[in-house]
Amino acid sequence: MATALASDPKNEVVFLTKAQEGSLKGVKKLLYTPKREASAQTHHYLRGIESAVLQGQAAFETCVAAKRAGFVPDVIVGHAGWGPTLFLKDVFPRTPMALNFEWFYRSHGSDCDFDPSEPVTADDEARIRMKNSTLLADLAACDGGVCPTRYQFEQFPAHLRSQFLISHEGIDTRFFQPDPSARIVLPKLNVDLSGATEIVTYATRGMEPYRGFPQFMEAAHLLLQQRPKTHVVVAGDDRVAYGKAAPKGKTYKQLMLEKFPMDAARLHFVGSLPYGDYVKLLQATSVHVYLTRPFVLSWSMLEAMSCGALVVASDTAPVREVIADGVNGLTTDFFKPEEIAATIGKALEEPKRFEHLRRNARQTILGKYELGTCLRQRLDWVGKLMNAGS
Image (tube, rainbow, N blue to C red):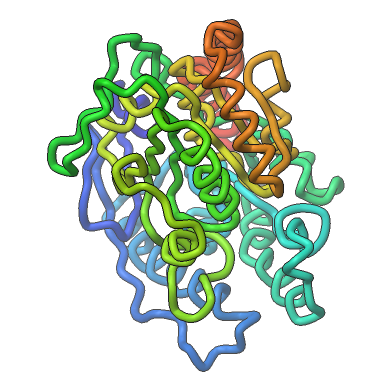
């Protein structure tokens, strides 16, 4: 959105951030620096709130200085809940503010109590309720909100949804497009799968239970035993992005490899890939696996579909919004590695039988999640808020 707006010379686009690295063409960067981290002594219900307030305080002070220097924006676009937008209305009270609302936390009925082996305690319930505090403060201050998917929209209490537009950020379908000639070749990692006929891929920010990593690894263990020609490629970092850390100071990758030893010549951990390599992974895959708890839907699933990949995904609510089993992908029980492995095996055994799923997956993204369409929808929404404010 920032790049699109900056492409018009009539617009002045300022990006408020604490990130020193990175730049966007035509976009001025306005840096803020929090004075400190949240204290370890802060009550654990409030630690996230303190962190957000510290972000908001720093952003506020930076914007006060910018206002004194003569800068007053016509519209503010931000991401709710994390802190930087908390006090912007106090600096620019007449400026319309449009915020992205990604997730409303619930202790029951979505991600937190999805796994029966991790029951929600009374302490969890109180902590989770407080996690929404900064999100609700942003909701009270903003002039409009956007949710990327209907499932995410429906997590918010019904009486708070009236300000929301449902609109995805969008997938660049010209970049993420099918390429039958694509091969997975990563010389720096000594990975060359140009001759492989069965490639199963899995992409994630962190190797963690929220994205079904333990179940995937057990399924991969079964699959490598059953199919001697199969290679498994895992892209992502050995960390936790969401949820609890692994016990005993280990990572989930370490725990799963200890529990399910696999042929290192056919199991490839490639880390977080540059986009040029990442798109080839999605284009060259025989089967792409996406597993998730009822939580924020990952872009990776939509990007894989845009590349015409055959996606095997968990039969969970955010997935069902996009994938219909047997129509544009295959779904399977999140908690059953044997079923996951069997579904992947079926897809590998009869690839031509599922060619129409690949085509339909691509069409789903072109029809509902194409970047240009989504961007125009969001820009139109922001423009209307700005005009209403003026």
